Image (cartoon, rainbow, N blue to C red; front, side):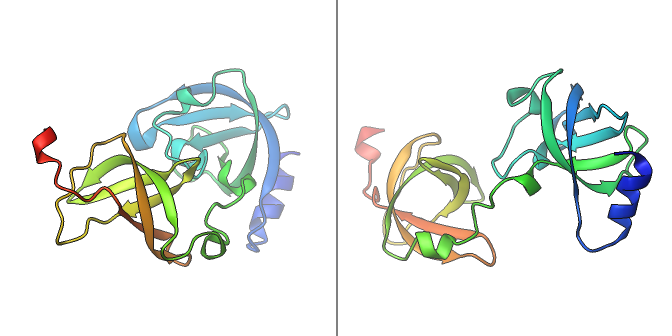
Length: 182
């Protein structure tokens, strides 16, 4: 597939994407600017940003791929950001959305195991054990002290599931005051 064919599909403005196989030529940049330059066998230059790798949080693309790997990606836009590549691509479009049907899988009162991975302004972030792609907000009951350790696992109770806003809130069962142990 050449640039003309890709442009015709993208210009339709109907949400169409073009799926291609491409080789990783280089991985560079830091933080949100971490990206990989890819090339197809037809010579299309593609740019893949770290946050477009999957629904999971990826620290750096070097953790999940290396130069020379061939991966399948979806071309979703012409590259108007810079002159590094012809098109922007994503792998997310090719993966099942973990949020689809979440209201059918989880209900208020369900017990789940959650691993804590960050804390911002008193809100704890977590991922369901065995379902790393589903990110949850961990809420501490107001009348209890809760000492949460980053990286630890907690048995939790589902309190809210909002598929439309991708919000999944759990309340840990470990709500006792552990200050004696500290």
